Image 1 (cartoon, rainbow, N blue to C red):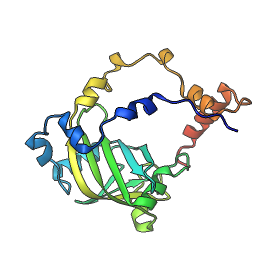
Image 2 (image 1 turned 90 degrees about the horizontal axis):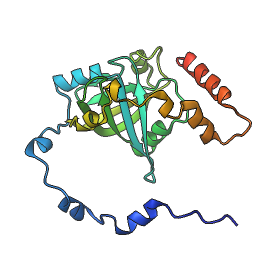
Image 3 (image 1 turned 135 degrees about the vertical axis):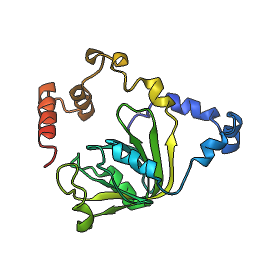
Length: 219
């Protein structure tokens, strides 16, 4: 018989967690009029330009049973195509081929995006309907990441609004003098080795695999 898992801090904290939206709202002041009014259903010239400046977008999805996932997508500035005022397309560049985000989109038809511009604290949130397209005439336009992708995540905009810069300012994300030194952090290879739980592998094996995957990232 498999031993029961030990209770986590979450199991304790959920016992008296906020029970409903009414209780949650009582813990906060109401949002300002501007915070509500800035939400739109289509892109303006300015938000189009922001997307064109972004080289990193975080993609949030959920599967049919409610399991959540957030995955980064990156490329040169403008790699996300604005097809019209209510539609954007993200090329699916070579990755780990798990297809977590794309499978979730196929299952639920929804996604949320957070566009990030290196060096700038303002971000852009875009939420809406989503689909995965393999239409050749679309994919042929999406070559910013090296070659036409196998598919594209297409999002039909329901909500778009700039997000408050406070999180990036507090994090010091764009201030190298506030970054932790490399030797104060586990390396990518160390993290991966622990996750794989395969005693026959070494740090050198993982480092070589990581180097190879970056070397051939467009294949």
